[in-house]
Amino acid sequence: MCRLEDNNPGNPQLSYLPVLDSSSSSMKTSFSLSKRFMRRPSRSPSPVKYRRIHRDVILMIAVLLLISVRSLFCFLSFKSEKVSILVTRTVDSESSTVLRSNGMCESHEAKFSQTPNPVYTELTQFLSGPVEPSTSEAICVFTDDKISAHFPHAMQQLYACWSYWQHYKDKRPVLNVRLDTNESLLQRVQHFVYRRRSRDKPFLSTFWRLLEDVFQVEIRHNSPETVEGVSASVPDRWSNVAASERMSDGYAMLSGAGHAAALRDGLLETTSCPSQVRIGLLNRKQNRSLLNIVELQDAIQLRFPGSSIALDYFEGKTFGEQIQFFGSVDILVSPHGAQLTGIPFMPTCGQVLEIFPEGYLIPTFFGSLAEASDLGHAYMYLGDSNQSLEEVQSRMMEDRKQRSRMRQANLCPVSDQVADSVEQLMEQWQNCCHQYGMAHKGNLAIYR
View 1 (cartoon, rainbow, N blue to C red):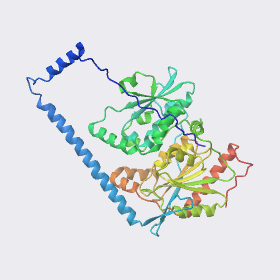
View 2: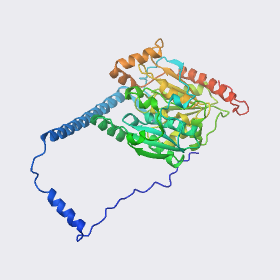
View 3: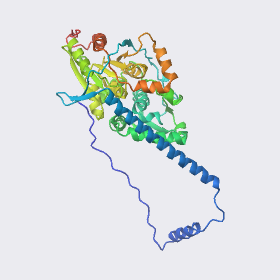
View 4: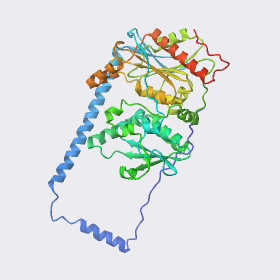
């Protein structure tokens, strides 16, 4: 049961200006000052100032025009891609949208691999500053910049702060929002545009509100000068690296500390290790979509007839609906994408299978989130199986345009290979459940 009710939406605060009597001296003074400033200045302003203003205005208009043209180009490209792959939409018995291909899906062989993720046993491994709170408050700094406008990268910081607050549960949790004042005018315009785009993403906005309403986190907004004078911890893996590097960096929480479980149990009621494993297929409707999702569902159901299989999409779903889906599946199959940001809400011993297109491979991004949440993670790469992870990522960094194009590609893995990968993850799920003594009557056989 998801406890996400908001019965106190809050009222906007209004400020009022005092009304002055027309006969008062202050009113007369104000009138005399206004007459003084209405006089023509004795010397015209410097033309340098106007040149600077004109330059900034022209630059801002050029940036907005460039963003509009690029958005139109992306929209037209997406329309043509939908026509070329001849994807039809059908509706299943539960009235949820399903993508089915018209024989145009060419299946690709995939390489199944376990994800090598770092393990964090100390806060100092991913936090900088005075980690030990010097006061009754545990203050964590959130850097509000262009990259954080995309909610998976904002959650990189918030999950790390959550682990910090859980480690010092006797302290009052405080989140200090720091604006990046060193951004150029172009970066500020981009930040504004990204913020506008992210307004329709319910995950971050709702999570932000729940920090205050459910977990009693105080959120403050301070300038960098104010933050420096406060005993605060900063997720330094993102504060001292370039934005381009941070986009491929991963998540961090204390491993084995149960911090992700505390977050999940604070919002959901979940059941771990049921007698029948629950498998979830989480797809995307646009780029990086699993075109043969129906075939994958049929193959997994045929391989494991005693299991429960759920298929879902997160486009248009609320935060509560998203985390409820995560809390109801033990093994998750999904393409790489922002929809995986909520995997910390999966039950104990959960397993994640992430699928990547050819030419694009960053398994340590959400793989590190699974590790930080004490979950299992593996991935399938639909490219050259002879290439190592380092070789694929090296080629990704060489050609930015090629990387962007490959990142948008839709996916069509071999259904039997996906079923084989799910079987391997099911064995790990079974071993985990036996290890923690959570199996129901020991009835956790692999379904064949």
